[in-house]
Length: 274
Image (cartoon, rainbow, N blue to C red; front, side, top):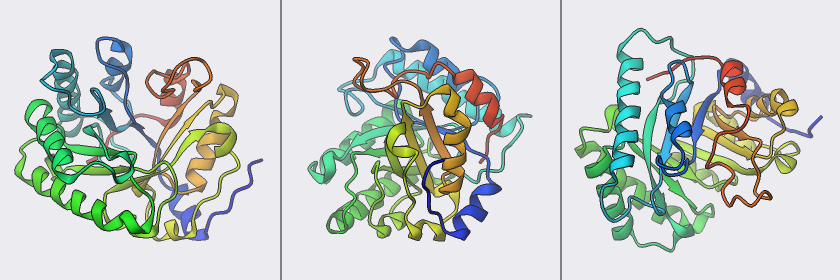
């Protein structure tokens, strides 16, 4: 059994919530058609998926990415306004987020907002994933300035239904003040061998599961139930688990579907939420 510590409030919040998927970024739609098609299957409990073209929006609109973005938007509309069942996760379902690389605080604000405008103009994203986000207290003011600017851009956009969504891709547990800078924080991104012994920070007990995401690679099929128990126990509402790892010659284990995608979808169950 993994060694875990979680405050009672986290355990109470997590036990009543249903997990959903956050996809940190599949390969290009031309190279990963099955992955992108899987996101639009009816009943897939998708919270959001990240569009990443050359660590950002690219230099010009990509026709294959335009098509994939349109299919995901249409699937979201059908789910939200049709007869699709809804889950109990109070988070955004099926959003497309643009990938913004913060380079741990090294990229200037004007470059990041230019990338954000391109994502909005070309792909009509409804939020942003801030990859390689700093986690220390000293960088928090700069991240707050960025998220404030992004919220202003989203407020001006007709694609950001519900005000848009901002996800901070720390991959580690950051200084607590970051929780007020965005809608969701990625508190873990790494291998199963670390995740199964991980511990949650006590300050996360002040927030519901919809505020946190965990991305874990190298999860064996036989440990899926255990991994989902850990996510719930630690108060995460959004997950992406895969049996791919970074030792098989693939630089990004999250870029393709896990071999057990259909199984994990069925275990979590169908649903979408506004």
